[in-house]
Length: 329
Image (cartoon, rainbow, N blue to C red; front, side):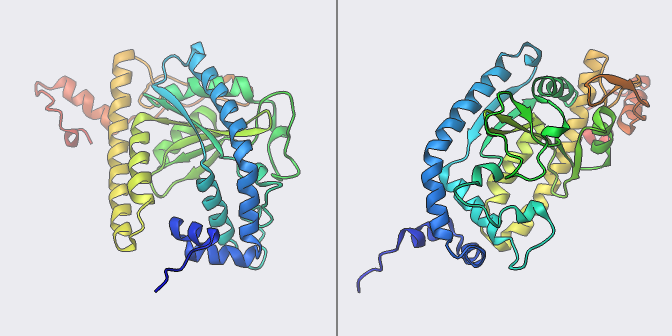
């Protein structure tokens, strides 16, 4: 029996295991394969330009004297395959009837003429910091270099697109993804009026800035090395898992790992404060809060923390700390 020769379209769907998503997306865009093919052709050259610009921006970060204390920074540009699969997934999520949610609807008419205006995470830079307190230093550098005013924030991704502005700028309100109320309190104390806050049920903790450089978008993510470890494990093992029977268990374990990450970060920041006599998370001092002009204003001191109180008890006692975190939390 002769083996059936797959078309390019059939092979793409099969290799990426997106049969159901592709069928749903094709209901929204009957010429989906033509759309995908044209985007692929355009992206071949476009991605090269993105690569050059994101590398140049990364070098600016690595050369910045103010950022010498960060742990590391790296970049990536989406592969063609990754971009195409994302576009199909976004179209598949649409209902056949139009919705009021622009963040969802913007993908309905996405094609080769506008995809690079709508997909804003084609290029990405990730900055890893050792301690959460270092985020304010990183924020100050990003804000001073790229913020040009709220009028540059996107409302409509297609009509508001700026191709040759001649200057780099932040293109949307920075997003803070936080895990719990304690995390939210920390970020609100530092910059309540300039961020959009999004609670993450999965345990994700990161700050995202969207900048436009020479008409190309770059998403800059800032997180601690502990949050990065959790994120890498979750993305590589849990997010990519195709086994539905195992995925629920893996998601639960990922949430457990997130809680351990929170505990580890809490202890890490306490060590930082003890070593430097500074810090926001556990400090008795009145800290400054960021505003849109990147100046500071006074704010209420951070409340006493249970771990801090336990540490004080340990300092007064003659019992040596055995390194067991359970004795602190």
